[in-house]
Image 1 (cartoon, rainbow, N blue to C red):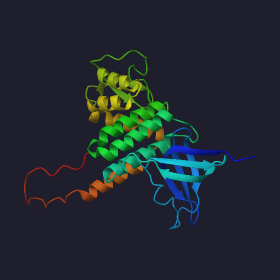
Image 2: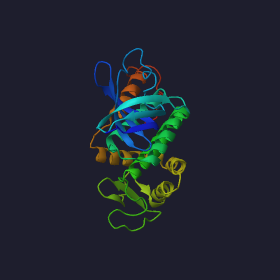
Image 3: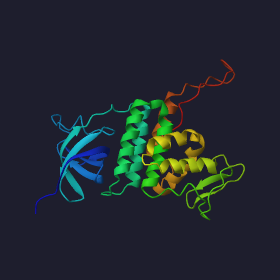
Image 4: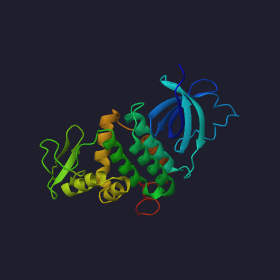
Length: 271
């Protein structure tokens, strides 16, 4: 029986790990076939033409063959279009990769989500100062596409439409519920409705960016809690890495009573 072959498939490398002394196994996110595991034979040799290509957050065109759980990479080339994110934007891109690794099953296509991911990576490379906004929009789109985001236009328990002026909190187990007055992570029904309307657009990425801009800080913790709940983790590895980097780059505190009494310099924006 002839091996199945797939050619010139748009893809991103999500993760890579050793297969042998000279080879790697790649977890790739492809547009038409979803998450696929591939062995890249000989890629660790200095003469391998794959070495400068098979990097995370690079838009690729790849070809492979096989029908086993781990297939064989045959060709890969950089697709072009944008440069690779750097600095903190690179860690943010790694966070998106981690989410896809945890929430996507293998061989489950998500063509629209692939396009949203490609847009997010491009924006991280071009607009590093907008990282939190890009991450929140992608989190919403990812949760919606894999069926883990509750309806943001109705209460989870009663399915009643939201009151635009009332405040609601996102509960991972049951969806939106009326919030207590002191809850700092609640949004109004109007804000939740704006997020749902953005997600319902035919091309929702930019509308989601605009909707998140009006509630960026308030929506961060509810989305993180929902992701932790469905991923089964207390902290994401890339988020811990970001916190460690920020701690290392933070200016040392002056001894008590010495120096200026002004407020300390702000740390990098938490994403």
